[in-house]
Image (cartoon, rainbow, N blue to C red):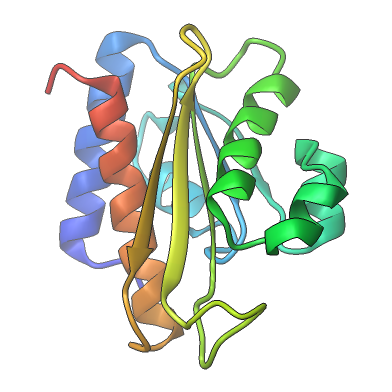
Length: 167
C-alpha cells in the first residue's frame, strides 16, 4: 500500500530524526497504525520511534490519550480540538520519552461520518520541549479509503519533518 515516494519520505525523516537524536510517537485513528508501520519499515527506526497508539474508538481516545468525553461530544472525533488533544495526550503518556508526536483523526470514507465529509482529516504535531501544537485540516475528497489514508501518512510525515526543522 505504501508507494516508493512515501517510503523515501519516511527514510529521509528517520535519518533526520536519528541525526538530531529526536524521538517521535504517533496517535492514529483513521490510518489505523499506517504512519507507525511506514516509519518502522525503515532500518534504524527503533532508535527514534518510541511510542505509537491506534485509538479508533472514542473510548480508546479517552483512555489512552486523555481526550475528554465532553470534547468528543461537542464536535465529534474528527475535529481540530481532538487532534490537538490526541497529540498532547501521547506526549503526556510517554513520560518525557517522546519529543514530537503526530496525531491524525478523520473520515476515510466512503460517505460522511459524524456530519463530516469523506476525506476530511485533522492532523496535529506537538513538541514536548515547547508545548507548541501545529494543526492542519485537509480535505482530500471522496477519493477512496486507501487514497485518503495514504495522503494522510504523507502529510503526517511532512508535518513531522517541518516540526523537526533544519532540513
